[in-house]
Image (cartoon, rainbow, N blue to C red):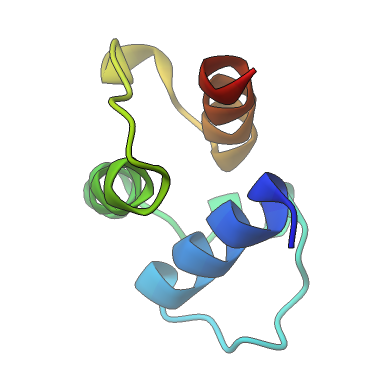
Length: 73
């Protein structure tokens, strides 16, 4: 499972979307509010054992995926 798939899975679960929901970051963004995004970031930090700094610059799931990919690279 790719990092993107793992992040989208966490985001869909927190947003209350069914697991079979479309795995498109833009579709997930429509279901996620700022509180959900903060909760997603916290779970991502735990899941990937990393710290996502400058959270204020993350506005979408795609932003978060890019940030995690950059931190892992």
